[in-house]
Each structure stands twice: as C-alpha cells, then as structure tokens.
Image 1 (cartoon, one colour):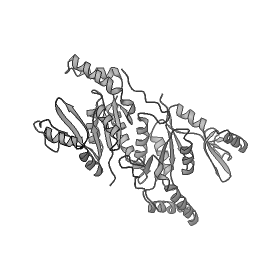
Image 2 (cartoon, one colour):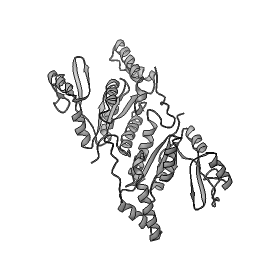
Image 3 (cartoon, chains in turn green, orange):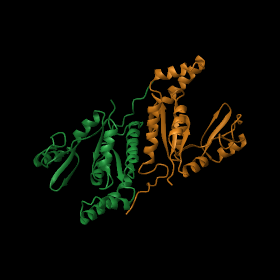
Image 4 (cartoon, chains in turn blue, orange):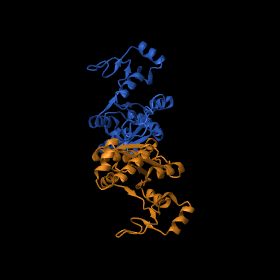
Length: 203
Length: 203
C-alpha cells in the first residue's frame, strides 16, 4: 500500500473552503482528516477520539513540550493541536490526509519541514466577491465583517508560497480542480510524503 | 491570458501513449502540440507547417547550429527537431503544449533547463503486460519484439526522474490521471513555465 500525502489547506474566511472540503470528501475515496487534540470541553454529541481528542490543559502542554504537535494554536483560551503521530498513522494507512489550518499554522509546518506536505490555498475569485460573501451572510455585524476582511487581506498576501491555488468561483469547478490536484499528487513519480519512488513495473 | 505549460511525455513502445494522447486531446481544451521540423520528405496528405515544417538538411543543420532546437534526433538518416520558437509561441498563446519525445530527448531538455517543463512518463501496468501487448499485435517479427522489449527496459530505467508516472492499465483511468495532472499544473501557485505567480485577487 502506498503512503498517503499530507494536504495542507488554508483559505480566508468566505473563500468557501469548508463547503469545498465537504464536497471533495464525498466525491473522492481514500481521503481523511487527522483528529486534532483540544483542551476545550466537548460539545453535545461530540465524541472523544472521533471529533477531537479531548485532553486537559496539563496533558496538552506536556505533549507540546515533548514536541508531539505538528502545529498548535490558542483560540479563545482553548488550545488546539495536530499530533504528528495521528497524522503519520493515517498517512501510513495509505489515506491522503487534509490538514485544515490557517496560514500561520501552514507556515510553521513548512518551516519545520518534518513532514512532507502539499500546500493548497483556496481563494475567492475577487476581492469584491469576498466582501459580498462576508457581508451577504447577514448574520455578522459590520465590525465582524471588517475584521474578517482585514484578516483575509493578510492571508491573501501569503497565498504566493502555496503549491497550488484553487480559485473558488464556482463550487463544481473548484471541486474538480482540487480533485485534480489530489489525483495528480497520487501519480507523482516520487511521492513527496516519503521520498521513495512509486513502484514501477520492472523487467 | 496565462502562460501554457510544456508537458514532456515519454513512454516505451506498447505503453499506450499514442492512444492516451488522442483521447486527452479530444477531452481537454487548450491542449496542443508544437509542429516539429524534419528533413524527411512529406508523405501524401501531409501539409507543411501543419504536420511538420519540412526543411532541407542544410536548413536544419543551420538551425541546429544556431541553437534553434529544444531537442533533435536522427532517425533512419532523417533529422527531426522541436524548435524553441514554435513551442514558445504556442505556450505564450495560453495553450499547454505536449512534447512527445523519447527518454534521451527528455533528458536533453531537462539538462538544458532552458524551458521549464513538466515531465510525464507513461508506463505499462507490468512487464508481462508489455510483453503481451508487443507480441499480441501479431504484426511484428519476434526480432522486432525482442528489440522493443530491450529498448523498453532501458526506457523504464529512466522513469524514476520524471515528475509524474501514469500507469496505463486501463485507458479511462489513465486518461483521468493525465487530465488531473494537466488541471493540477494549471492551478500551481507558481506556474513553472514562467516562474511568475498566478494572478490572485488583491484588495
């Protein structure tokens, strides 16, 4: 069984990444997510080891100190992390693993260079369309929209170093592009994930 | 208009490259071939500038001396070459250009590094299957089959340095893989062909 590829995916809020990921998971076999660790308490219906590995702050900090995380972040006083072991096990089972992280996390991961990964950036078709999408939800305050646009501006400035840029104008077209990237990476002559050549028929 | 990608494709005889290329040209828009130069006389129905640029041996040698060819080869006393200008013009028009050349030509091109290119290798699913395909045609002598198998052995030994390996077990699956590679390369964050970042929406 060949080794999976780690697919790091980032996007500004409003680019449509979540919808795109749902669609691609439904369409393409052998794709998965790694289960993250978090210190936030489970919400109703969330299962330990399925939605998250729920751990105490002490456990999380001990893991972090031991270098167990590929990347981690603190959001609203809760800690979130992606354990190297969880990702490595999933990859070894031959599944391509999506890692849905922001540009800071992605940059950390690339800089560390411990695990070979393909970096994908999902962008809105235009700045105007992003504004329209963020405002159009109608559920956010003007201030929230302003903050999201400011964040999107910073995130878009990082898009250039990603391996692939998926412009999400139309969901079907963007899904086809993302699927193409996944399939293409599966026939890379040398799989980035382990550096070994694919098995090719020999005389 | 974005710049096209140069797609160099090689395969041992019997891998099914020609059928695969016909299928992909029919299925995917914005794909083309560059028109080669040759010193061999036109066959009935062949048109100058369409099938080949038919030139005299003197013209060909002068072009070669001037460094006009990306790669060239001599086959049965006829010279064949791919002119840099023909390829560059096609790429500049936004078309992805296939260059169907053997491993020696591909290696020349990669070593020269003048024009960024993606290297694709089409392989048969197994050695047994290649033997079956080459013998099964029934039109070739045992000696011809033996020579082709020996050549295939040498070509397969070069597959490892290609960017992508398309294993042609089933035509539909191989076409899907090739299509995926082409689409994926079209959303590369930095287009290999010109090194410039794709246009991304900016605030």
